[in-house]
Length: 236
Image 1: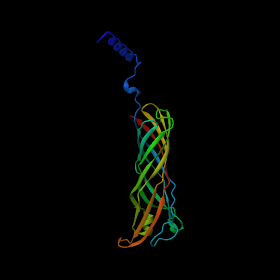
Image 2: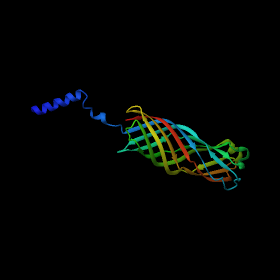
Image 3: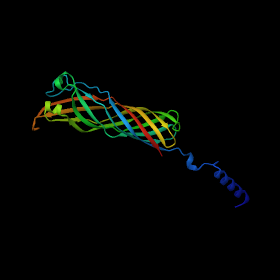
């Protein structure tokens, strides 16, 4: 090693020891965020009256709201963009009888169902992903399906044994949000999301021995769900 090389190496080591040259990883911005918090599902449902074989007139339903665990993963992309997968523990959602045709059942809970609704977003970060206050907007795709649908006692006492089926739906979604960064690792994440979720409902009632169908009602529910999420995020 010649004198010039030794001088350059010595200068670089001295600068590093004084903190003038940061370590290579110090300038790296975390590429991933995971967040966990509370999510409130607020359904603004609308649907035509139920109709079908042996179904009385003026039967309708109202879809209730639910609070659950909100989860998500964000992957930072080049520029002001990121990819987000919004998840959550499937909430148990109740529907309620509405309309004069239900008589004494009006406003009673008639069904319960678990709702699975993962959503993938592409987000645009308005002030850039490194801002302490980081507002963003996103568009994406939602897939909703339903499990463990159960007819509740007020319905089965009136109609007999009843099976309820809700179809799944693939649709668009949008949200707005804000990330507040306490430091390079920890943050507070808030979002308000909407998805255009629709489902075909079929309710089939039977005689007590389930040998004969006594009635069958159908309708198409537009859920109009708005989901509010507040969570703690960790970047890595």
